[in-house]
Image 1: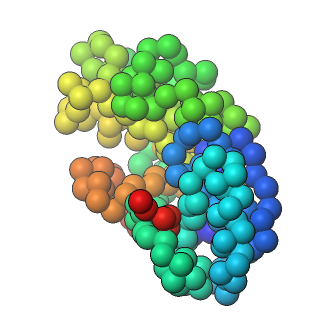
Image 2: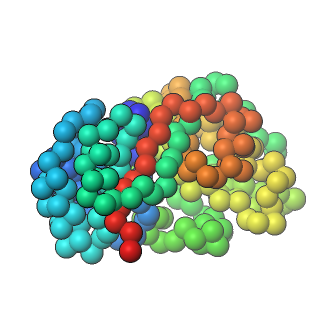
Amino acid sequence: MHEIAAAIRATWPPAETMPSGAFILARNDGGGSRVRAARLAEAGDVAVDPDAIVQASAQMQALGQPALYMVLAGQDGLDRALEALGYEIKDPTLALQVDCATLSAAPPPVTVFETWPPLAIQEEIWAEGGIGADRLAIMHRCDGPKISLFGRINDRPAGTAYVAIHNGLAMLHALEILPQARCKGLAAHMMRAAAHWAETQGAPRFSVLVTRGNMPARSLYASLGFEPVGHYHYRTITA
């Protein structure tokens, strides 16, 4: 799971990171939990002093961000310490993975196009799904191999996605299909096209992140051969 966590940070990078005792904090103007959560500086399961959590939380709040922590599978010491301080679980998430060679396939003609930077119509599709300028800035900030995919159905704009690679692991972020174009196979075509692009870049593995409760997405990924390889959740103080 630590390999995937490193790929998340590299392919969906915050504006700034900074140390805080046992933690690495992330500053970003918006962009969601994935790019703003604090994480342990050391890999593995380590004991965490509650005072370190209090200090890190104060720093996050001083940045204008909620006190939010990413807890990877196996980080039981951190999980117990946060729970004891009243931090509640948020967004349990699965990391799924498949070999690029297994998934890779060229899409049907005029269905999926590779482009960087994204086209204006892709930004409009993302915006309709709630993916705005803050997340677009994250995509542009990534300095590794990356691509956006533009999907069409019946010769009309219908979907978009972003993929980037870190240490041989391709990660999909921000897959968005317009409501009227869903359940027509475009998402599967885009996933196969993403794996095809990653394979041409020398990446042997392809990963996606999905919340446990998102059963439609989990069903799609399972049908494409993705299997769970790890999990994580966040902890935060809820009002």
